[in-house]
Length: 157
Ligand SMILES: *[C@@H]1O[C@H](CO)[C@@H](O)[C@H](O)[C@H]1NC(C)=O
Ligand SMILES: *[C@@H]1O[C@H](CO)[C@@H](O)[C@H](O)[C@H]1NC(C)=O
Image (cartoon, rainbow, N blue to C red; front, side, top):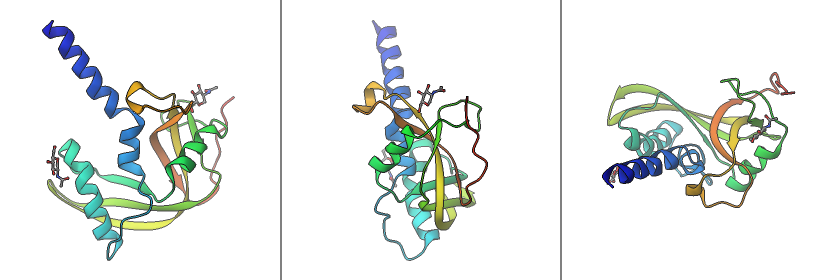
């Protein structure tokens, strides 16, 4: 009985950590929360993300773009991800993003430098998990990269 429960509990945690909700929490913030500058914005927003993992994440990108429109990017042609899986997709438009770069690694006092710009984003998508409670056929699960230029588009066969 105990073993079944532990396995189930583990499944629920792993399921939610790999679900689209974790992607949303880490990468989607629309509209962007007001802060006097991007460093302060990053310090504030990253505090909540780092609170889950109890370490200072070294780099993170926030997309100031509607979730529905980010999900739509899952339905653009597949491209190859950095890890060579073929489930990545590039946005058709440049969107406002903020990159947060770690400058001081003393958890829980993680300090960041924030840089906002317009960029394309590349996301990996998967069919939704139970924890996602979604009717979409695909949901973003990972932010693979962002790029200001059109960049090389690696088309999967
Ligand atoms: C960190 O997470 C705990 C729950 O795990 C919560 O009580 C606390 O308010 C969070 N702190 C911040 C800064 O988000
Ligand atoms: C294309 O990407 C989706 C995820 O967005 C994936 O489910 C599908 O298997 C991929 N297709 C190919 C041919 O790799």
